[in-house]
Image (cartoon, rainbow, N blue to C red):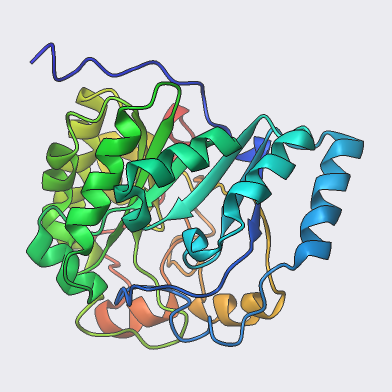
Length: 313
């Protein structure tokens, strides 16, 4: 077990140190839970003028230490290495990409990105097996390519790997198995679990799942990830249902620069709805959303207001 837990040391990652820019709205996966699947065809990515303006802003004001390049699948941009080089020259200490990781199965491409200045990789891992992952992404072979990409990155010193697993009916009972599947990845510094929310007032019945069913699996995954030396963040889950793992709820995010029309869709979620909102001391909880309450109600007997304490900061 000691060899398994030999995780490489990583710097602390603070959301306020980063700015996030959406630079691409095309993807070669069709993940069933993707929140922009129905809007990426009309969302407009940042162009080179926007990109240079952000670089100039940080060079002038030194507001951020890190830049995150995101927006569907950024590795489809052929100029991604050049963008990273420009960001580093503009004073960003770290450049992170958000990716499904399939192109990273090419070790030469991995090295090209790292040599260009990308030192953080936020990779989507939807499930613990090829069968389930590929069912969610709707692309056969995507799991194998993503796992190969993670392995390639793990062989490069100084790289930080972060993973994101979206919690849906198709994945909620596999969360601990995802943690277990990645136990040997030494460069894996943080695991995030984002509970599914639709960009609509209605949810896909095959995806939405009761928080009460999710809770024991999520708590188990958080505990196991900590055993393996990972930072853990949970998004969009009732704070009070995390119990002893309440400190894992972190809904903070880097500043996001995106097509402003995105926010019109995003706010259709209707966050912060809870019977106990006026009584609860949590500063992180997003409560329930409209689509969720239409299916599962308000959980009046299960939710409870949290009191002030170290886990609610």
